[in-house]
Image 1 (cartoon, rainbow, N blue to C red):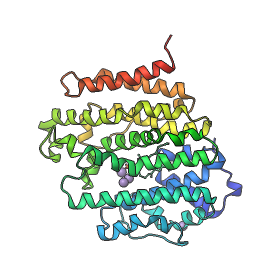
Image 2 (image 1 turned 90 degrees about the vertical axis):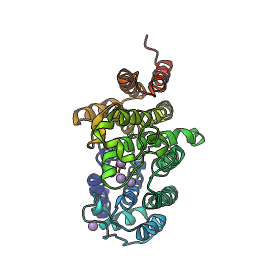
Image 3 (image 1 turned 135 degrees about the vertical axis):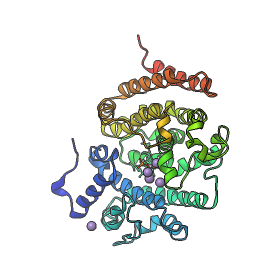
Length: 359
Ligand code: PS7
Ligand code: MN
Ligand code: MN
Ligand code: MN
Ligand code: MN
Ligand code: MN
């Protein structure tokens, strides 16, 4: 049920949707099903952040070039005709930046209130990314403490939660009270980003980047690279369990945030990625393949999750309950975090039981 109205779309807006379809596997369809008031603002918000992330991710751009691009990306949004052709030829979403002028053209046509929200988040995220780009190049350890790790996740995902929530409230599609609960929209972003970072460890290593904090991996191995040595598998799995636990702790706050969303299209938009994330967390938990290749939930599972989570809070809670139980069942008594993981699963299960008692 796409809410787009192609008859009224300009050529540049059509081009923007072309790049949305090219760059996003999970977000493009849910964005295009959003309430018409927010469909275009959120699509452009996505493309702008995707463009910024493409620069952040490109390890062929020198830090000297990358840093000012990241720090000044919000000003690029006011430069008609700006395009970028210096990304490495293999960079995944290079085409979007080569044709970024269409995004700028459409951004400039947005309501002022939406432009201000998007530009503000872009500025904060770009500066945060730049801080950590420095970190990766000069610092052997990558991300040091759990606090640093959570600050990085705040920059690249918590801020997206903030910006989206502001857009929902400005568009009168969410309860304004959500603005008074920053910990809830922060949790929505942290849960997605942390799960992505756990899953992508091998892919990120191959790109020369590491996001798992030293404070966690150093409890299990001496060197980050040791996580990938087959003889260290048990240690590596214990380490990944600690990462999973750290992410799982956001589960309740995510469910609480979603309880505050009344518009059906916004509900689907926020719930589908969260359901994919809990399923991904279950997939990576105690899974040795994480250290060998990039694993993903199957197309079939993704399809079912999409249908089930585009209903209501009850069906999303059922998904969370199902995957939390699977994590609980896989939990290994020899794992140093066994007890903490069991408690975290129990808390999510109890929270769900308190809103939807089973008998
Ligand atoms: C504006 C829809 C709903 C309150 C591009 C959605 C990369 C996990 O690292 O490509 O390349 O493997 O899988 C999305 C909160 C952000 C956080 C963040 C913008 C939810 C640029 C998504 C998405 C907040 C930084 C997945 C965070 O990308 O990752 C819009 C509420 C972009 C959300 C990045 C990651 C998104 C991510 P990677 P992916
Ligand atoms: Mn990135
Ligand atoms: Mn990325
Ligand atoms: Mn073009
Ligand atoms: Mn990633
Ligand atoms: Mn990636």
